[in-house]
Length: 171
Image 1 (cartoon, rainbow, N blue to C red):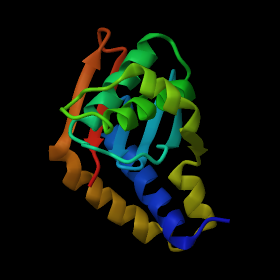
Image 2 (cartoon, rainbow, N blue to C red):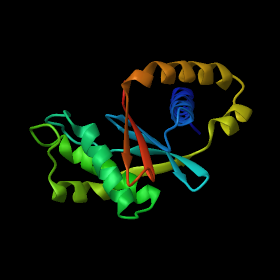
Image 3 (cartoon, rainbow, N blue to C red):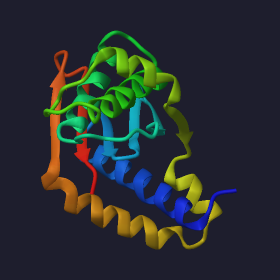
């Protein structure tokens, strides 16, 4: 059972992921204080995930989204699975909030936090729409919000275009 507000948030974020992917990004990460949402493609198959960060007492969150993205790209280039790459990335982002200074991270702290990161695979929005009658309005709202975020999307190409990441810093 999902609470209605959580279910609505899932529909909104998954719709946002899919809308940004339709703009041309192969993989999409939306970072939040609580972790990230991701749409990741392997060949022609797209998977959607929510990765939840462990609770920490942050000192500074400046640059933590950049650390998360860098750790994700590094893990993907090492050939790690989607779940392993997301765990590693979210742990690194969380660990970076324990440091003073943008983009700093202690690798041992990130390693300690990896096992506390929860990763859940999510259904595509179209499947959710069939089960929840009021999801159409939420989908349209999320699409509007994703289009609004278009100016805030940083896209990086890595490995001769094999990995295309859209990183959206959460609102």
